[in-house]
Length: 335
Image 1 (cartoon, rainbow, N blue to C red):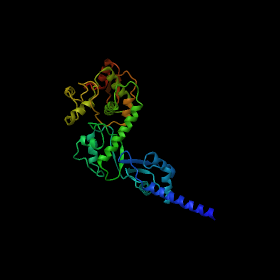
Image 2 (cartoon, helix red, strand yellow):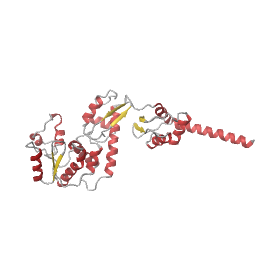
Image 3 (cartoon, one colour):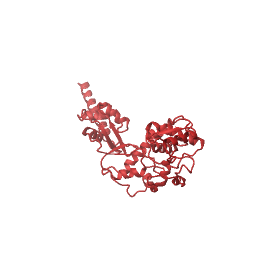
Image 4 (tube, one colour):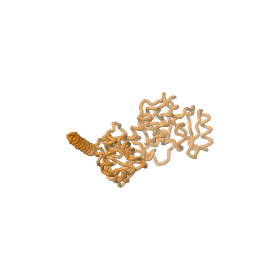
């Protein structure tokens, strides 16, 4: 009888300890590196698989504990796949309620490759689901508020579709896009080709933005990167129209003229050697990879064929023939 009594007491103590631990686990806030964590729970995953995904992405601290919580609440078969946004400080119990009720994100915004920061701000302003807190902010104030040490916002945000709960601020969305770009750029930089003429990831980002604006066809990104890299190595000017257009700002009326190429600005790569001081647009991952893995080519010139593709040449004579063939007397727009 004493043994049975002792076992009974041990069982009660174990249950109390488990209950205490479970309460602690379920109610302890989880803090993320950013204000918001986006998690896309995969369809067809088991409860254990979803718990492990939540743990691997930093939403919870213990997959086993979350699995046990869901089972104890009797909702093991009710976890729903979908895209979720969790704010820093959320508890595992609140995550449990969210994923079993299927409170997936309701709204989204898409930032397009090649957009400028001004276009990003305009897109957010036109999205009624976003709380607009940066209306009166300067670009520099926005950078300071999202924790960026950069002095110019262009190109710092990753183009993608971002899901969010209605009422999220534009500042929080920009912060997510900023960290997404930093993460992808840093990762790509680690696997870059040796001997590239970039001193920093930021210089690679500048090149990627030029590639993004110059490329009409995705399969030409590496070739265009190869031309520009060859020019940088040789000390030749890049002579790319998109940088000139960017430097013209609101003065650009849709046409670029010979006189525009002669006006010296910080972004005129016809009058200045090397890269411009900042990116000129928001490059996608493909352009970043092209900048860091350019084609191995001797080409120094390219000219548009009129169908979105380009003819590449390694000598000026060859290039001039291509201009005569494809441009038919138009201004030499080769870069």
